Image (cartoon, rainbow, N blue to C red; front, side):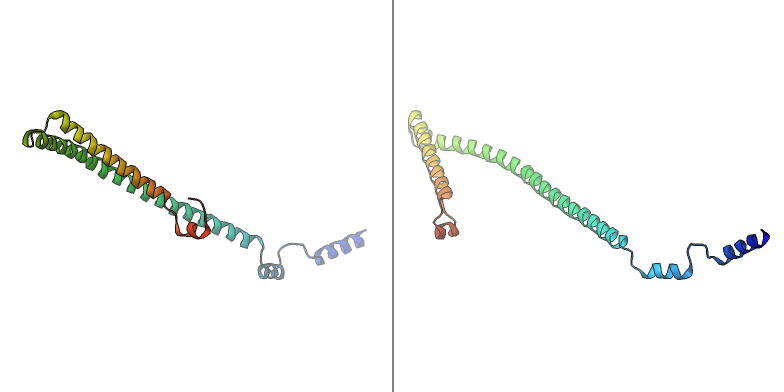
Length: 144
């Protein structure tokens, strides 16, 4: 039994133990790994999505800033326009009643007529704008 035991030991010593060998590591390094390109693509897509979201948020912030700025500038302008209209009405009323000696009732009727005329002009211009056709609709015969 000692001869067979020594033969088994010799065979075990000559049999290579499976594991990393220099030839196996070189062959494995030369062979491209399929997981690496997919991981790089996924990482690139993630960075691209992050940049797109960042660009979109920057555009959104700029649009909100423009709207807020427009509102902040338009509110005082509208307030001043209302005050100016009040003083304009008072001045025209003064001219009609005091300088031209038109009775108060007729002065108010003149104001009403002027406002009706202005409202009619605004409605007419709005109808013209909404009924205007685009050039491509005229060629195709599309409805307005």
